[in-house]
Image (cartoon, rainbow, N blue to C red; front, top):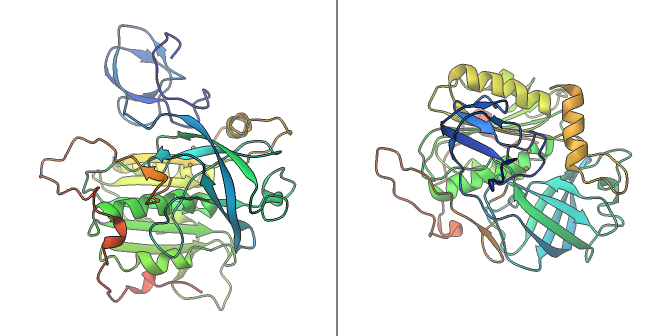
Length: 361
């Protein structure tokens, strides 16, 4: 990037992963991210002549929109629905900088509706209420229907790669479930028989807001659903497990593709398991976006991450929201792609869900 090469990027601090490139030949120092041959361009210094592959992603653009509705999903989570004024294109799992007029910008991941797999023409976000925050406490109060919004993006590298049959292991804590749900829906739209494990985690039962999405995801024959809480009350549904998400991870293999979104400590723990198994891993760690009225969000995000020494999707069908199919080298077996088939055309067969896949109270 310092040599004038145009590489998609966002934070320039090595946190978001937008600028990841695969080094084909040559030498770099710094920017390692745990993936063999892959570096973060904003942190890597080129030592020799270099050949690198940059995955094509949608162009970063700025557009305006309007808040359509807000709805409480849990005591500490609100769904915000935004209608962009222009068409926007992004990959399931990417995120946007969202600035409500009069408030500092914040980074949120588009997601799918909880009750159905697609919702045309709108952008849905899950926002966790932060005590003392400048933005989240205003949502549903001063930020409500009709409020103007500016959208900048998309960013991030933790998006679904289409055209593969590998098992997906999707782990989300708190509102990290938003990009996880988007990736799961996109994967099912492409291949309803793909093996997928979805783990949703929360601290308490009231914060475990994912039940409506679990009810429809369980209809897919090869989707396994796991809900975990740190503190489980005595009268909770038996399908809800106690502990950290990593306590209930399936045994990973080198062929697995793992995504982790949410609390940085959880993301780090899942990454350790994935790398130890030789699995592919993509991360979107959420860090608090505090700051003054003029802060840009991502700066606070990066500083918080670095000070602890320890990035956000959605599959939304219809216009003007359009997911861009990800170009991908096909596996050895020929694939039967379904990108052009509307997602709502598929009615997955009903089946008796296993005990750990049942919706929770």
